[in-house]
Image (cartoon, rainbow, N blue to C red; front, side, top):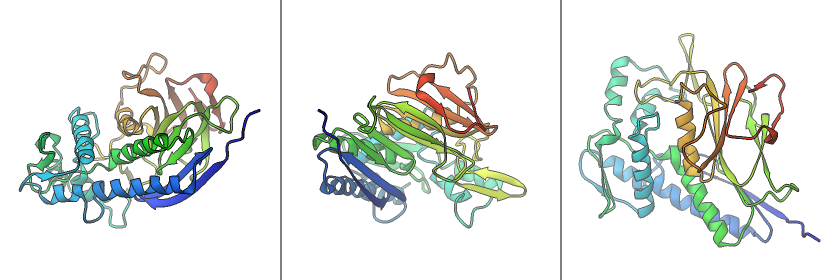
Length: 323
């Protein structure tokens, strides 16, 4: 006779989004509060949206001097820089360009080309010096800004998973707003697999077009549909290309990547979004065993699937074509 696993759920506010934590079995409200305290600790170090924080100290010292940071901030910055220097679209120094466009805010506008070029000069990841021995970060040019927001959510979700494991919590759902991490077996399904819905980019939040059946994983989604700017008869989205300074244009509306660790998912959504040469879906393979698969949604309502079994997919909206 199996014991039914009870669930405990709490909702918080942090990281600029709604945080939803659910744990099963013997978990308590205190366990979830401890996880939220962990979120607050890392947000205090990594935020660039308020003072004080370690990253704001680094940014204020740009062009002046190195700044010592915690080991966690240093290691995450190192990962962000190594990834940024691969030059595939991910860039942890793109903050000055983002603040120029201001897409998603009431004063968003299309900048002049000269302004874009000036900000692009501040986005070179090669102009950052990391000192491993002293755990310092130095932005060489005044006006540069380090922003780890693109991977901080994933990093924090992974740390919550570590905390839950240490507490003996076998199954949990960690939802950091667009970043979902599912740990252990799914208690509500006989096959112990989770069901993850892919959001319809053209509908209100909560309407899914595809259900994916999968084991423990992180699911990270990046899309162009939530923050946009209408100007001069054109629509501009918020995913800026660090090579051109303008929103990156292709046929994709959203990318969802399923990975072992959430921080990797944050990186790989960007890699796939900028991979305009991706055409051969059947023969596509990921370089890392870290990545389980991906779902790409196009502007012409096609759903492209990479690395996932057809038997684990269920189309929920017949207006879409599942390839």
